[in-house]
Picture 1 (tube, rainbow over the protein chains, first blue to last red):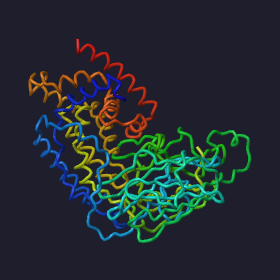
Picture 2 (picture 1 turned 45 degrees about the vertical axis):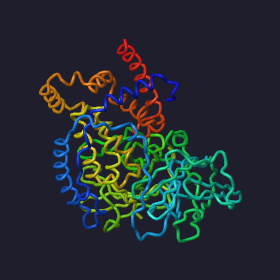
Picture 3 (picture 1 turned 90 degrees about the vertical axis):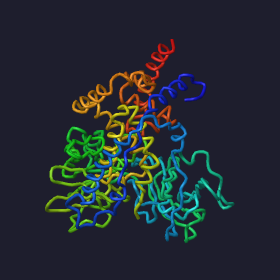
Picture 4 (picture 1 turned 180 degrees about the horizontal axis):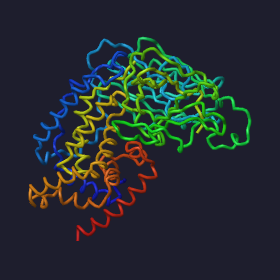
Length: 372
Length: 157
């Protein structure tokens, strides 16, 4: 609200008073909970250190309650720094990159690019491109890139932080801007959401420039693809007119999942067969928001679709498969469907893993994405 | 590659904000419990490793936990007992008076108001943080403003 809004000032004053006796935060035994991802040998049960941590946490809560001090005099300025300045910790890491593909629109890219937002099958893609410097401890804060549709170059340069654009870069187009929400994390990890204009289906190349001053390579390059719709099923009137004809199931066929014993909203984790009227019910689709736990129906939350499609009715590029063991880096999300556990990689959501006592199934991200 | 968000550092940075937010939603007696529950839950299910924006994630979790907190009869009984034990002194407290003016707002409305006016988030950002639609945020904010305009005018007279 603007300062010309007198009510806003009164509300802020009211909020200040209402929270002025907030207690101090409870003490947390973090040193016992920040731990590496469980190995494949730990996949059946929640790791012991979490159990230990939970117990230690309860002790911390008691200590925190005992430390209540009443009014703490905290000023509003404490809340006006949503992103702290990174303090570069000592590290031997000398390279930077961005994270792996996080949405269905990212296909077979070899560099790490997070394209958030759902593309449509036929109308191209418009969404948020997030470049994440995932080991920013030795980085300066600059990142540049250009995005080039095949045959028709489209440039952008994000010049946040030090450095700025060099002469090699074209001016930033009006419709391609760095979005709000540049994030900086305490360990120096930073991310830059950048709004993409509508892009037609096609192959694009993305080049990160040498503005990432911590890189040892001059530049990173990758391609990603805005896909056309998957092959349509055999024409049928009912399928052609079905609102969810390309695959996402309707909400009345849900299989419930739970988290810590509570039912999970279908807007957080949707688990459905394919539409029966198109004879696609042999396939099964799980839809989640990313990060998992967020509602995929929310604005700015990418919805990710994973498919088990034994009869290949969706004609996707990658099929589900049975595994003998879970790959490294995969952790238990806590989501359960009866005896089935849902596991994922912490930063690479290209697959989910459904684990029970007798099997491990890897369900790939739907590529090309299914249409809502 | 793995994003290694330093949870301890993040909590050190945002803990005060989380407790303050929780204080607005459930009061100072339960704020620490709510925050501790949120942190414990997020750690126990490894979700801190899956979330890039821990601050927003925790703020949302505090709002969700606060909503369920209000639905817990047992906790409510405990809370009322604690208030009774303390007597009426707090009713004279500035903070208690301010919270009384906010008491008729729903938990979601209080969360929207707080994130809008204290954290200066846009309706879009509030929607993202709380996991609701932007339309919901605007509607709840409008209702909350209407209510607060009324109670604040009475309070000043």
